[in-house]
Image (tube, rainbow, N blue to C red):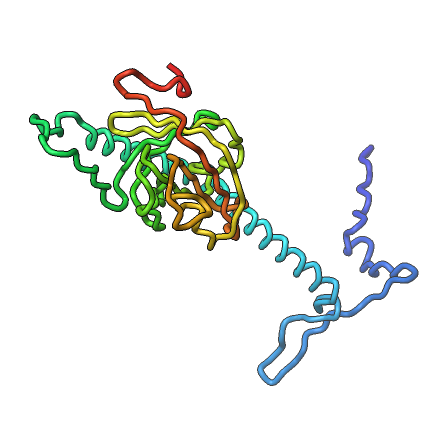
Length: 277
């Protein structure tokens, strides 16, 4: 008495009986999914709704292409990071080692205790890949140890001295080559006439002043001749020539910077003014 009668569930077949599927709306098409019977039994259900279309293949191709491009972009970014920071760190580490080798080679304790009585012999250049001198470009706030030789192995981590060219401060053309990377001669194009380039020898500083820059072809090796661009001419000046690839990220040209010796200063009197205190 007083109990509320239970209403039949809306989706309860026992109460409402079987329900019919909704009728398709105008413009819709119903495709029955049927299993395919073969001699080995029934295959999985297949219909034209699951069959790949041109647009589904196109979407798949675009998705795969996008993933490949993203991966390629990440690889390029990693390589660029290595070129900017990784390679610079490696070069700096090797430059520190070369600095120590150069200081050891210039150690006064290695000098003979008795001065020679005959004519002083010309210093013998070091072996290929061994440190030769210090090279400073104050405008770029850069300093390197120059090694002997200009092969790829020689100049991998340092600028290299052309073996057939003059030594620092000598009559002729002291010529140095370096890679165009951020750790070496990357900003060499910023040098202009009047800028200083300082070379450190064992007992003296050599202060050169830039007087000309030029772009040449890779086969124009006369730029490192004793008289640049005049092979066979007798030298009358004490020059310095720096060479590197041009433009940046390529090597189908060469950037050349010529400088002339402005003065020589004994190391005992301190550092040149161009290098600061």
